[in-house]
Amino acid sequence: MKTKTSSMQLWQKHFIDILLILISMTIIKADVSSVCAGNNTVLECDHEPGDSLVMVVWKVHRLDRSHCLVSFDASGNQTFNNCSDRMYLDVGVNRASLRIHNSTISDEGNYTCEIVNANGTHISRFMLQVLVAPYVLVKINRFGYPECQAIGGHPAADILWTPKPYYEEQNKHYTEKNRTTTVISTYNPTDVNVTEATCVVSHPTFTSPVRRLIKVPAVGWERQVNSSMNGIQKGQNNIWWASAPILLLVIAIGVIVFWQQTHFRYCLRKEKDNTPDMQENPTVTVEDVEPYASFTQKVNSIYNSTNELSESNEKNWSPTRTPSPNRTPKNYR
Image (cartoon, rainbow, N blue to C red; front, top):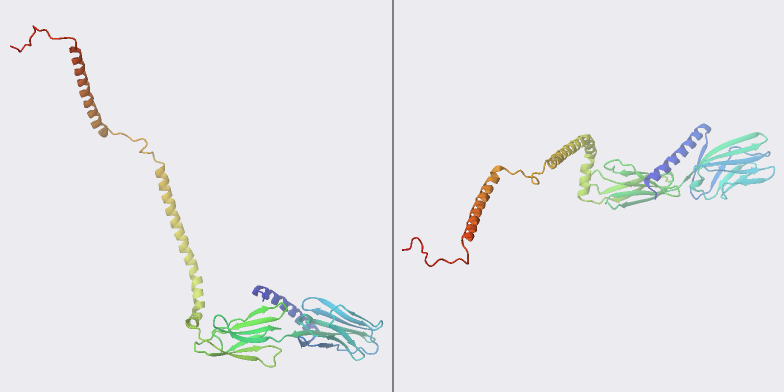
């Protein structure tokens, strides 16, 4: 399966092509011919060639925007075909038909028949639609909910549920490589007591809608929460969008306040760093120096006095000098 985006692009292209064909049908009043894929298709011109047939030309304009033609020249009994080996002309007096074997989706488009005879040129137009019946499958998906699938249909099938689900949800479409479409629809019941659900699939290939019954399992609290919350989910989303500007304003104010505080602290720190360094060049006060200076002065004076006394004693005392025997001390008697 392709992605949802590519599916939407293919659907837009397909829608534009169909719209152009419908417009041409409205103006030219083309007939619509439907055939199931795999069957043979026969497109008959509205006018008979007659005995005076000159030429028959079938012009093909497919939905994939490719063009080709199949022609028969009665004068030279020559046939030209650049469309497909599955296409050929069946020309007679009463008929000038284009036959397509094993029709496929690629054969869809606008077909124009031009008959040239003695009476003039006669033009007939047709729109060919190739139908592919989808395969219908119902199952419980991995989330525990009933799921209905219309696989490989062309055009896309329509899916409905009975009883109606809790909320209307668009069916998901996936376009396959062969231009068929798979439609997937999930059932979400309105009541947790619902035990059965019916998937109803409608398609042009069905003579009547296909119905598939499936048991609805209980998925516990998740279903109860979904059944109670889905109703107010839309309101909560509206409240969120209404309060979002206020929340953004509060966040902006908080960021501004935080930035200002951070900037203020940075300025204070920078101003403090720019002040003179008190520790590198300290100012010595007199009160702190005077006790130490007076103490040092006293110690120096004592040291000087002691030193002078020692020097005087050394001068008065001589090791070679001896006292006189006749000399007595003053206080000796």
